[in-house]
Image 1 (tube, rainbow, N blue to C red):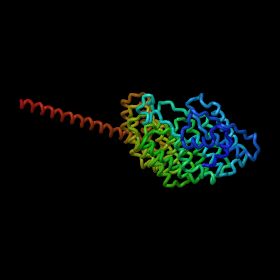
Image 2 (tube, one colour; image 1 turned 90 degrees about the vertical axis):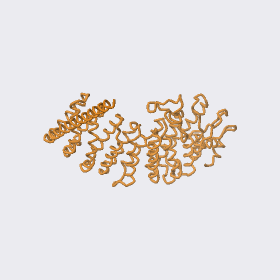
Image 3 (spheres, one colour; image 1 turned 120 degrees about the horizontal axis):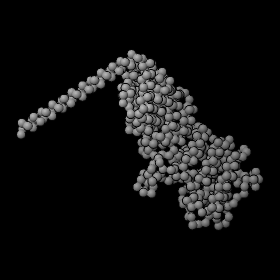
Image 4 (tube, rainbow, N blue to C red; image 1 turned 180 degrees about the horizontal axis):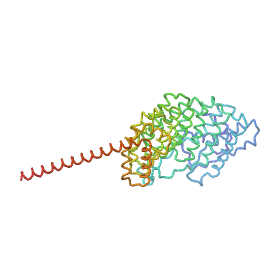
Length: 467
């Protein structure tokens, strides 16, 4: 850690020094709340000559390394307000003219130390996490629980604002700063994405995106670290508060990928993004996930076939709300799918769509039938009607005869009419084959019943002869 002698010297006699308290905060040790805390009152930047401003900046950074317990709003009220005002001064200082930092290693080290003291902390367990599973007072509503807001947000928000403006400042040279905003720093930022406070995750999202843009050397590491978070979420915990925000960052990153796509990016799509369809909490981040998937398909249309097949692999069969989300995403992907890729996945794809059409859950059936409202998808179906119609015809006909929902019945009639207009002969042939199949099914059922009846008769005769 940098020398804090200057900061310590500025403290009044009998008070804890800012530098020592900063070290305590950085190491995670607890300060004894019974010891009164007195912070030095430093002059404002306007009250000192230009040549002393950078020295005052370091003193204020050291003062802001002191952290407080916000669980009791009546403790250290004056000191908390003094620190808040000092943090606001630091934010204003970052926005002032050029040469504020001098690209000094010592200055950058103090900045990152102050940020670390305030931001990098252990997050409390979520009410639905395993740590609280046996706690009767912890709640257990999972997604229905209100998020726990960070009590120290009055200070944290300003620290995040300071870090954001510091990172994007033209006075910070990325080559010098990357020694301080290093991989360990980035990992600790990523750990904070699991915070329950949406305000904190929003700041983290913006800051990490800016770091990704400014420090090119960190880009592969950041992508890999996000991958690891996804793997842990998918295969181990299925609990993380920041998946949506991480996907939002990735959406912008994917948008900037150069063509042709590298193999590592395609691997990331198939091994990290597509399995994110598995967890139960898909609804919390599906919009951002679907955007990432469609970005890949838009950049490389040949990815449509493997993406469609992975969607079918992870298709939910007992969760209707997830099934509606899958159908929404399916339409977005099909909108970007070229005819050659569509032909590769056509049979398994429409088998699944057929199952959705005759779903007893009216929202699933309705959403599947809405696919025929998309002109591009209808054009693809029309080109391949001889393959598509025989697959879905049974589902359409059963809906027309007996589906309980009037809206689904009406939509099914419209789709059938569309197929009749495309190819009436094919429609009639499919109807004939379905009737033959149903007649055969009835015959098989009757034969099975006759066989069982004979078995029962033989059993009764055998029992009578034995008696």
